Length: 219
Image (tube, rainbow, N blue to C red; front, side):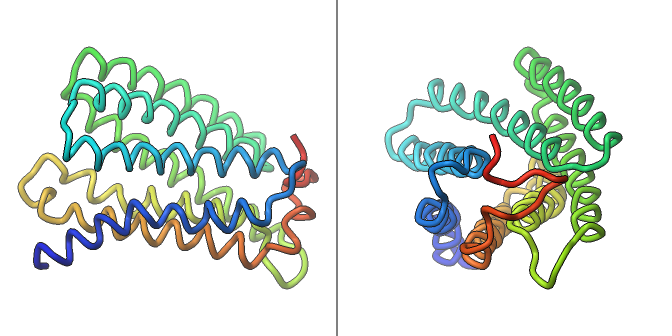
């Protein structure tokens, strides 16, 4: 793939987060705190990516490195608590707790041993794609009516992103990994489209979407 196409994909990968954010902010009601947390998480990721572009033009690698490191902690924390909240199965919720603790320990370890960073990223991808896959099966088995609840689209986006980027992350330290990094950004674009599609399709029903007996508007 030529450099211009790769650059376009990289730029659109960052800007694509504005699509679900924009649609979500238009339809999410004030009382839907759970959805606002999800939108806040997307907004933080969007700002971190924008900061990455700024850092590329006006380098301050020390500051940006701290921001990225803290974002990894936010990332693993949000997914753990979101998937635990969505899951019906007590076993899946317990797995979420232990996975969260394990990833936090690995995150702390990579602060002192940089070579563990890639292991941390791979572990995060494997763990959350595995858990999100189980949650998706639960949602499908418990589905009522013809449509799919908004939470299905959000969990599907989480599963898709972590499952697909796992392979790219596995090769990121190799020369091949650097050449195919644009695939990671393509997956990111697709994930944001999945989120946006979910918000749009469920714009009228999201407040009543059931998740284990709860509504998405619950705190």
